[in-house]
Length: 453
Image (cartoon, rainbow, N blue to C red; front, side, top):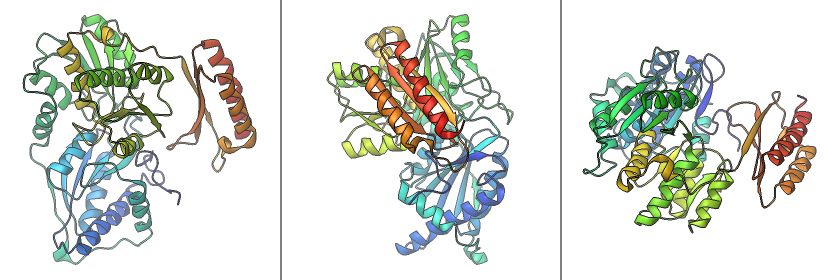
């Protein structure tokens, strides 16, 4: 079955439109609540289920938090409200509080006028496809309220920030500290604005900050992992050792070295994979996605490290790691999964794993990246009208075969329909920039023609 509302990372869209409206979110909370309560009763558990809700700093979150709370309480579910918290913090608190589920209200790296709803299981993991389909099926039922004595309650969680700060610090050894390290941290005016600087300072780093003044509409606005040029300039100006940029909900990150060069998720995977292999920590294959740079695959092969690819989305990386017994994976966008430290992509915990390697080995970020050479990779986004499927057209598939033949043995060419917007992402990478550009344009032209663009 195809999903009607869920995309690659929960439900996402423009505020006030379609599923990202107060009335839909009210029904969504109610449907989810009834599903949890009925599942508990089927197990013979008569307790009211508990759901943890966190959010980023978008102004629309006041509206959606209230709608989810009302829908869940009406279904007989207790609610713990975390306030602004990183997505992985909600995953952690869901497990820590022994809740039955977790919800994050966030559109991650998108602008403030977008929003979304993401769910976590009781284990603090992203929901699988079957569970998301079950929630969609429950939405077909009418909104309903349990008897008054069976209604849930909603309370604000005490010291959620403090509890999560300690969880982050416990992901590294007690001996680890950042004494003598000057770090610039960019929190994207998002959910990490309180926690990330606090964690780094408690580990004795000298910390300068960017993007720690959210006003409801400035999340990801010229700051954060989507705009690393802001961080690069500050790192160079301050003479800092490095910089760390998070996205709006704190589940992805990028690093910037002292020269201002940006190191994305592929670079960070290389650093962690090679160190963990040498130290004996690495288990199973490293998992990336179809967007992972071919240069990383080649570098890991040289080190004798197995590498697998999945569809785009950290939930698919997570599933592959579990299936193959791995603990390390991620995406070029900066989603990193360190499953021996967290159940989901966690920007702060991943940053600490990188910093721990640099400190222990006495390396600069530049030195740690010396063994990987990324291939030129370019992407063109081709927009299409509703109902169109240009990536499936015969002419496009023929053009794709020609493109793949052109870069065979030197790189890759592939198409990826977006899971959140009507766009086909056309990507080519190879060891020659001229080859990349010519192949990319030819393939993109075929997609445009099929899309009527």
